[in-house]
Image 1 (cartoon, rainbow, N blue to C red):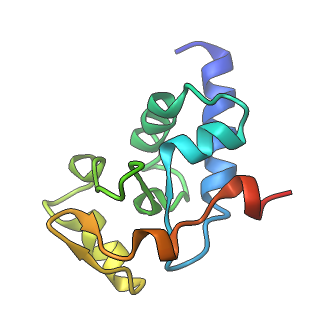
Image 2 (image 1 turned 90 degrees about the vertical axis):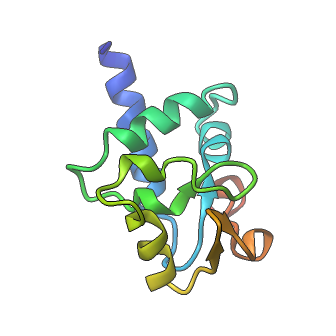
Length: 110
């Protein structure tokens, strides 16, 4: 991996650590906040690589509120369980109140 990619990953982790308990954001919202609007997939790669760090990766979902990264968590339902422990409603891998609990770093971090 290129050194600049590792630096980007750390920036992603800094943003993800700011997501409040019981809230979620999307890969694209993080990429946009970091000025890399077309890098949502790279944010996903960062989340996949974050499991040895203190990063609440379970709070990052796709733009429609789907738990697309769930297969990167141990067990079959860990991502959903972590979200539900925070009061987030999930049915069939879909966050039910997505718009209400969506956290936009571009609006929240300034």
